[in-house]
Image 1: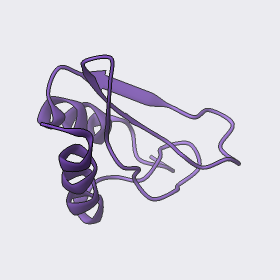
Image 2: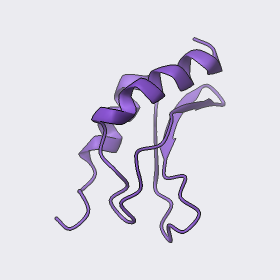
Image 3: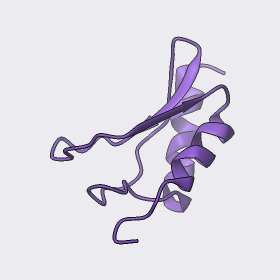
Amino acid sequence: MNMVEVIARGAVRRAHDLPCPFCGADPPLAAKIAGRFVVGCENDDCAANPQVSGSSLTETWEKWNRRAARGS
């Protein structure tokens, strides 16, 4: 899977994925960096800028979505 495919899949998933648990920003796009998939908050105003990574896109989105929702 190339970077364009990863971003396209991440963009499709955005509507179904949880926002950042710290700032509430919309879910980011996924990226493949150094052979691993990464999902993280892209909001410049987020003090925490959390990130999760995994060996597959599905695993990474599942990790992101297991994070506590804002206000929970």
